[in-house]
Image (cartoon, rainbow, N blue to C red; front, side, top):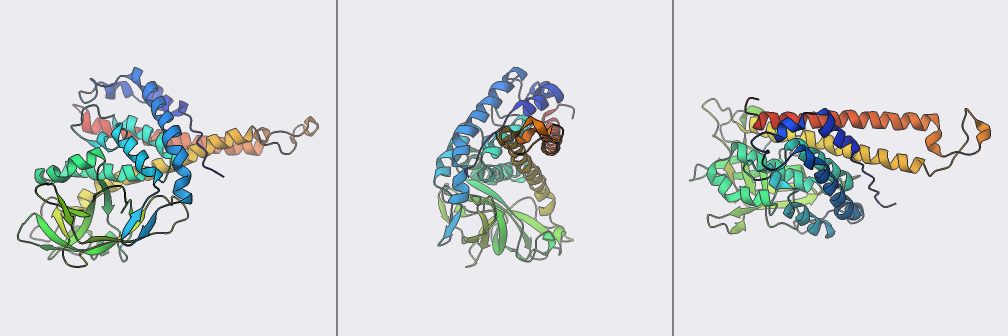
Length: 386
């Protein structure tokens, strides 16, 4: 059975136009010259159309073709290359994370637009969201010389990005990480050595470079999470003139999963030949061995948690609307309250109604929680008196 996209936008419009104070956010200096409350229907409907016509038709490729790996390279479904560029080039992708990008969408609006798109193709959209998280982190914590090398390419979607924390021996207990960082003659740059696993969007064949936010421990730093530093470790090293060269960074495989098979969940090795380099984000550990990496990384981790919830919501909501449509067609059984009325469509049975209600109530509550979170992000970032 092929993937069926049945998403409806009424509940989203209710959240933005009738429940949350969206007009106040649109009046901020950041947004007032670009958007008004009257624009919301047009924007939401346009993205719903893109999701239905661009993303949903290639969703099946994620499960039938899926991501694959060969000779140190992960490959995503070929049909996704063009779709990815369409999303990025038309302003529905990473560019909205730019703090100085003119016309960037409000976070609370982009949050629901992303829900619409991820419902159309759940395995595809993480390729956008992971790079978005890296772009945000870079603007918050990285020096100007790092941003000059990487930020424009991330915001345009020309380069991808990932969050590299998990290791074979360090999952939920990130403090057990074994990845090491060794100083070089340049105090900004360290040699990186280690292995990471379960890295979402960790490798792909449609982009020339991927920027990894990589957690490692500098010699002399404390054990545990307090001693971890964050590094910008690109798949390909970016030279001062912008050209790319090898950075001793390899994808050694991808996970075989029950679902979201088009999303490449990668195992990565840095410094197998002791030639992998990364840029330190922030300062080196202090005299007591305390590093800044984990505090920095929590910003991206918390964003990823919201992304995971949004993905779950999108899939759940699309399933609900599919179920309601199917329930109008499927004839089965008689009504307990009126067995002589003949066979009925299943949407008239009380237990089916109960299941519909549970699903709709749950999805609406989750959407309300998420949209309020995104609203608070706009307030925190752009309100003159947050």
